[in-house]
Amino acid sequence: MNRLAEILLAGLAGVAGGLLLGILAAPKSGSETRHQIAGGVRGGAGWIDAQAREANRQIQEAGAQAADQIRRAARDAFDQISPDFDSEEWDQIYAEAAKQTERR
Image 1 (cartoon, one colour):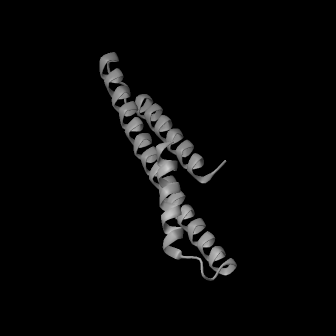
Image 2 (tube, helix red, strand yellow):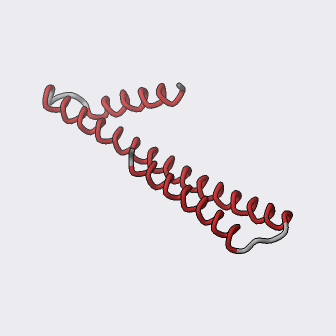
């Protein structure tokens, strides 16, 4: 299990445990209890949403960094293979490939 999944699972377990303890420790009328449970679920859902958004941001950032590293490595390889290879030409090739990838 990766680190993010462990964090999400621990968060869900904490929310569920806290909700259960709250219900057992302070019993209220049925409507009050339902309202309290609904609030806890909404709060947990908000937390999960925030965590998912952050994970998505981190994944996108890591993907962009990896793409940049690959681009630099490919450019360096071309420079070593062909010293007179035009780096501006490489930038144009890369930009066109990036556009085609975005269209998919």
